[in-house]
Length: 531
Image 1 (cartoon, rainbow, N blue to C red):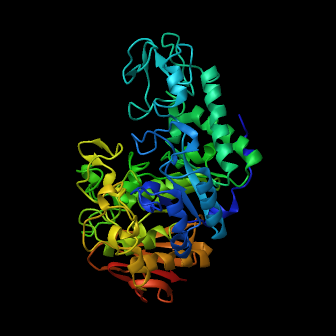
Image 2: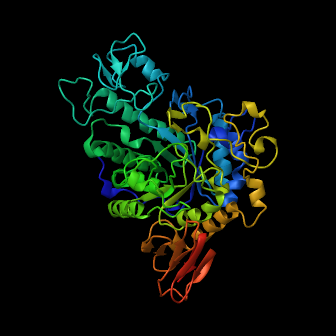
Image 3: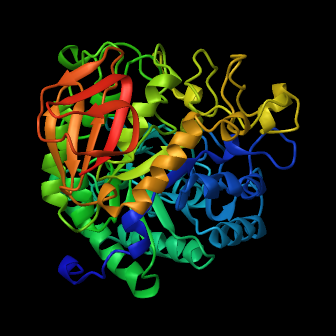
């Protein structure tokens, strides 16, 4: 395995980047079929350039039967016809490059569709070990769909068979537990490199890796999976030194030392992992319904002010101590699997303080498309391409079409609305980008100004220190000893007796003031100050 101490430095562009995730089928439709596509994305790059983002991450665009919205890949080397062609991707990459924006693709590393030729071959040939098969029934395995007897292991849905990267602990009584050096695991590691090399050769800047932790099975502490990614990163760096790998792992303390340039703190998982981010945003009114933890059922960014920032802060401190200078921890506003910030009773007005926090905290920020204008989670939508994963979990409400303007179809598509991939938000007061660009006081223009401030003052950006002076309401922290940030996500004003900041000068402030004796922040207010 590669020596992780000998890695190249991170690509410099990532260190001060702002990421933007877009769901390709819902972003912009260029050909009027009701489904977003690559040409549509290219046509809307001016919006991203004006906003100030540096890189876009596209959810999977590869060939797929779309039983899980593209996370069931049937050909890693072909673009799904609904999105366009290789030429369309080349056009997007080039147009983005001209605007200083890099394009990242989504790599589904741990499983394929059951329609992938690899799996169809494995379902015929008992000697094929590209997937995990057992001749006898095993809990969690699925019956073979082909002439091959036995059962296979899925990674998520039953139509997503897990690729075989081996088991960290083989056992002679369980022959499906392949060692890591078996032919199938070796072939799958080679395939990952070939896939990444193929698309990097076409100009993309890197990958967000889906379920990056899921490669090697029965792997305590994910130690052997980490070794695989360490080796893959070293191999990539030899040919593509500027490429980045961003994990969907939810455990930066493990994934970043393993070889990823960044990992997301996700919205799911226990309080020491993704649950920390959940404790900030999740009001349990969208993709997941009902309380997830009685003791922490109120999130910090809640109008009632009943939450706590401590769960997040404790997890952040533990993760940053483990990550050190080797990479970044990414914080998203939301994503395709989780509720948008505007969800249930939370309004767009409350997002202003949320963005002030996100864009001044020392994380790698990631904005999910539409959050910059305050698009909401739309409840009550039908299951669409696997969006529903249980009676109280439907992700479709976070995947609705981007709201570009007030024209019919909201500028997303010229198709009749009944042909849209998902329905538009039916709220007549729904926000749109055109109206907000025209309003200097809009949420969109605030996000633009915060991104510009972050770039003008690197001490407000990714990395560096955040010394928390108060973790209640308002949340108050210093950045690199040169900046002070105060955010109050509750409806009621917050006053804090904290002398010593009377000379702080506002850089961007809404309803926040530093006085000789303390800090005062109006409801849903914030302030970013120079010291």
